[in-house]
Image (cartoon, rainbow, N blue to C red; front, side, top):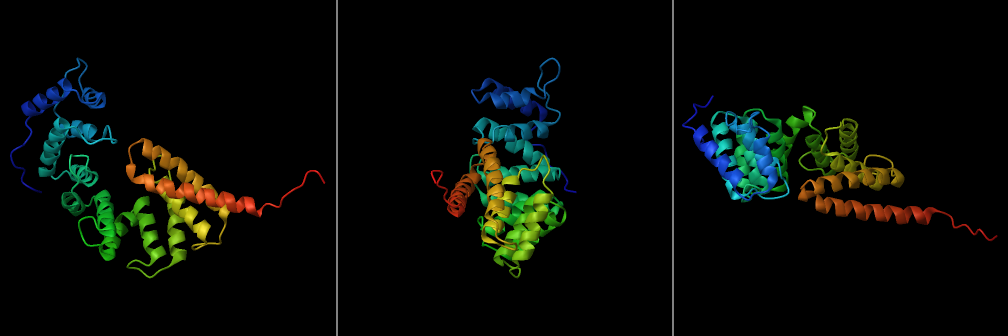
Length: 274
């Protein structure tokens, strides 16, 4: 346990900063996030600045945090990090990863993810997997990516599960095994629940398997089913501010159009005038 240093955000300073946000011209969602934790008299509560900061940080994922909000959130998260709050480590890392804190800084993101990973946080492990898989301010390192993905995958996190599947599909660090890739994708698909936010990504991979015959028999109608389901979920994610899905959606739509043409060409022409 780290010995906490002096708080950067005292209750008095927190109240002052929150009142400043309320009096500013920021989007209404930030003010609503603050008021959602007010008492029955409408008075702002600052006993749990982390909960307030978390609501402020993620209430509007479509835009960069206004500077006045970013300052409060950063100080509140840093105070929590001093007290070994691994969720705050992930939160702050994610704001740097996406650039929503005001700057995109993968190095800072990795720093906070590694702190949270050391605390056993599986979301941090998964995020580190992405950093090493794609080379986010580090050298691409598939061994490290596998190391970070495998822990949450074995714990049942679907995103890490399908990323391990990707590594088997492409032979990255592990021996290429399309059958294993399909098995992992299928297991992830069968594990989807109502709160799952990676349905689009899982369905995309299932669609690719049936379209190309990767680890299974080629079946373009089944591929179409999965691509169309993926398309629907990508629309929702984009509306919610997940701009990373734009390219994925374009690729899915292109595949759907190809399958439609292929299916139409398989239909025998009928002359109703004979």
